[in-house]
Length: 221
Image (cartoon, helix red, strand yellow):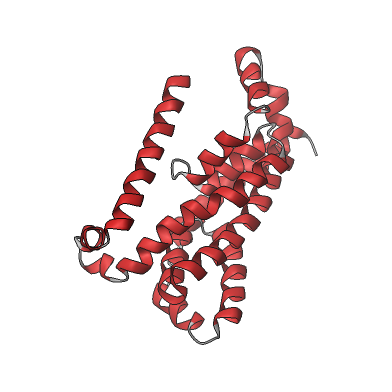
């Protein structure tokens, strides 16, 4: 298949998946009730499988799955299950982008943009780790973007494996702590942080790191 045709398929697929995510509604309560029917081991396996399949086609469903996991499994188990699922997602999306779009991008680059592409191939593990560990770029877009670049798959996957749990656990711990009240009471989140100073301090440090990474990226542009 011609590189241009493969890239066109890639773009059309991204647009269709985005609109598909807008059109479908996920029943959070129904998912929660379903997973509660099974022991944690079996429901965890089902969760991972459904997370990978459903979120691949319906991107906005990730938030529903993450919140449901925090309620059903708690912070620690939900972090483990989501980490496994997101690792699988990273492999699938990276190779989809690499197969369908990389050749076209590589052949279309010229001048300074081509030099940038070559520099991306040498990006070190630290920056891949920071991109993955901080919520600056959604996992989905990061997986696709790295697949379009010459970044080595093995280097990116090490960042996925080691950095993703930090970002996932921060979100899951807070969701599990705040619970469903986050929807009915806007002050529930701030109230939870005020009652849990350790979580507040960790979140403050985490946000500071995110800010410094964002500032570093802005300076390098």
